[in-house]
Image (cartoon, rainbow, N blue to C red; front, top):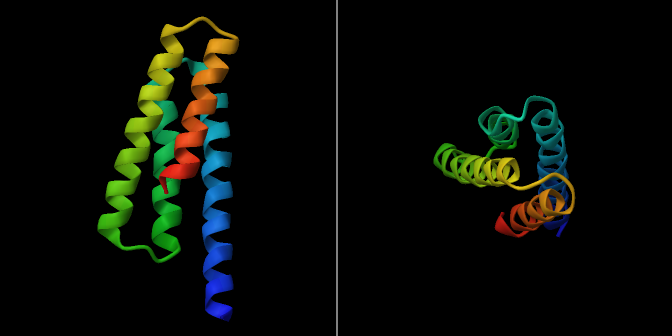
Length: 102
């Protein structure tokens, strides 16, 4: 039973880190307006943290590739829409996908 609670804590920590990295990459996007670097800032630290947490290499590779593609599409769409509510809607949808994806 103790292992289940420890696993639950690790998953929750990774969930919080994913949302934090999405917020930080959004801040970088606001400064640079470059989707590629913002998506890299989102996916690379998550891959490193996944490896540190002991996930399998192939799983980390596939997961970080999916998260990079998701973040890149998000920031690319945000560069095409006007700032304000449409931009926040795209970010909210991306956050919900990130939450329920893994």
